[in-house]
Amino acid sequence: MKFVIALYAPAHSPASRRALRFAEAVLAGGHEIVRLFLYQDGVHSASSNIVAAQDEFDVAGQWSQFVQTHSLDGVVCIAAGLRRGVLDEQEARRHGKPAANLAPGWELSGLGQLHEAAQQADRLVCFGGQ
Amino acid sequence: MARSMLIISRQSPWAGPSAREALDIVLAGGAFELPLGLLFLDDGVLQLAPMQQAAAVQQKDLTANLQALPLFGIEALYAARRSLDERGLAEASLSLPVEVLGDDALSALINRYDHVITL
Image 1 (cartoon, rainbow over the protein chains, first blue to last red):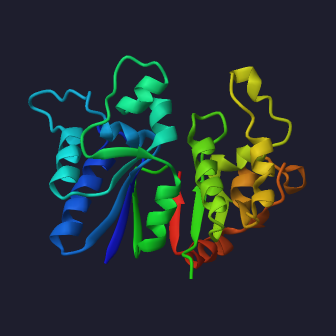
Image 2 (spheres, rainbow over the protein chains, first blue to last red):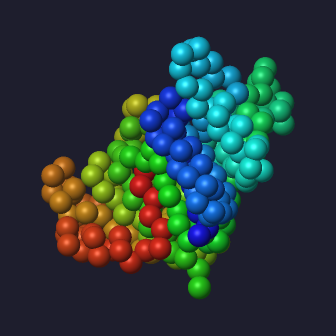
């Protein structure tokens, strides 16, 4: 089955950890992840600037590794990212900000990517919505 | 056939960017001419309240953007009757022409769509 997984809550929320565990289970079950899409506060899960305490689980770091290990299509909504300070090099430069913090594996793109993926997917599974 | 999507908007217009971002999903999908619906539920119905003064809390008024939805071909607009009643909003006063649905009709509506996003 083809899945799109959308996440709307930040890395420190239980929803982000649940989404990651779900994504792992999707692949372990032999299914396909068409795209991961981070929106609203979910964009914080793609920040490379999160410092987890030593005895805490580093969800954002795990996300970045997971996306890279499986060569997944990990998209962060650009408008939601700009609003919350999750920037890649190009956007940091464009807006005169001192640093880029988009974690490896993720890319910034538009909401059209969510719709396009939803058109291909059997299931759109959302985590951390209201 | 294109897969349909229902966006359920549950936040008031002054409770952060959620209402704006739910609307943005609808507008982005409208550009692709996808079969979309937008349901205002719970505090989300407050987005339909007339005569808002968003500037008083340094916010942008979403009303004009909402009213543009039919121009973008998005006419499947719904509001929950119970949510309106609980907040004292009369159907006739709303700033957008929406179909007002009771609880039973709500579950039928949600079942009709392939994908559902709740923000």
